[in-house]
Length: 136
Length: 136
DNA sequence: TTGTACTGTAATAATTTTAATTACAGTAAT
DNA sequence: ATTACTGTAATTAAAATTATTACAGTACAA
Image (tube, rainbow over the protein chains, first blue to last red):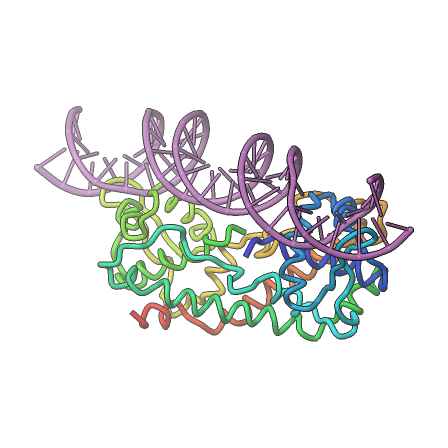
């Protein structure tokens, strides 16, 4: 998981929650986040497939929340962004498999990464997008 | 925090715990992890300054655990690696500060990142390096 | 007292990852 | 038809990560 994607997606979702009911174009969102519109549209792919946002093509199109901010938790956003990856990574190189530790450590690490992801989900679960946007 | 550094440091620490009492050279460690020896020595900087490893210069030098694996938790290693950074990051660009949300979101995100780091520490705290290395 | 095998660290190069840009087909409103 | 969007692919640019090279400093040991 790219470490800054959660920040970007949560920022997008907060904008949508702050101005509910409106269709937001990726260009306007990108202007606010100061990132490229194509990157916004790419971030939206995961959020859409999780049902967190709806999009409309064509003139006056854009994106809006797929459900009420009260019914979206920050864990929902985190899980959408994370997908099947983890917040932590293995080393890019495969360790020496002839070594007792090197041959087995990656599987142990991967299961630990799953626990770590779940610990993050647990603390984000009770936090709603509604409450988050109301801070602003 | 670089996402793969925890994996690298934990692998190093596991090797040291598996063969306690010996001085391990960065070259041997690097060979086992299949990474560059200089990268190993750089990883060791944080582990040394946290007292988790001792090092010895000169011939027959190397590194070994700074204390018993029973007294090292995986959280100790995580915190050493993490330092003052977070596992998640802000977007690399500064959002539009004239926007109600853009002007304030980074501080909210940073405090959330602190909570996330702490949640990880909480689940790693009860896990000792001794128990981890005994899996192999 | 010299050779050997290390750490520590800096500087640079190579590689990989991430983000930006360009381009354009498809869609829908007007 | 024109305009303003999404969706997506392809390419380029920039940034981050990792590897490599180099060498001063240290300690052991012949």
